Amino acid sequence: MGGVKKLLSISDTIPSNLHMTASFSIGGISFTSDVEQIVNQKLWIEYEPATPQDTAIIQAAGGIYNVIPAYLVNMVPVLKEGSQVIGVGSAVPLGSEQTLASTFSEPNFQPDTNQKILFAGGVYAIGLDAQRGFIEPSLSQMIQEVNQGFWVITPQTNITFA
Image (cartoon, rainbow, N blue to C red; front, side, top):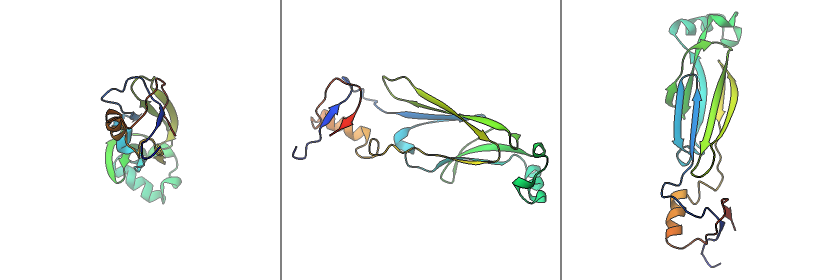
């Protein structure tokens, strides 16, 4: 097609704020971001001792797996992007369950929410791989190209690339 990108189908109307958001909540932490900002980033949850006393108990036991009984230690969930702390949650006993709620929202669609059980004391990665859909071209670039006439638009709701 000689350098012109062809979009087989997209929504009838493209709002100026076309974007997908991701929201995560666990143990008192709430975080929402445009998916484009966090895709392929190192987003993770790590449980850390809640107090210096909790750290001392873990060290005296020879490590977190040797603390008996586990309820002697409290942990806090810490949401991080790389080494940057995004949020710190409330203290819970070591080994207790917490629910991580993830919600993905985009204009004109119902939000997609799922829940996962995490255990206090663990380390959990949150992987977002949007493949080429949000990386190249970006949605903002796609909108600019639609406005410039580089895309062929049809009134469907799914995006498919030729």
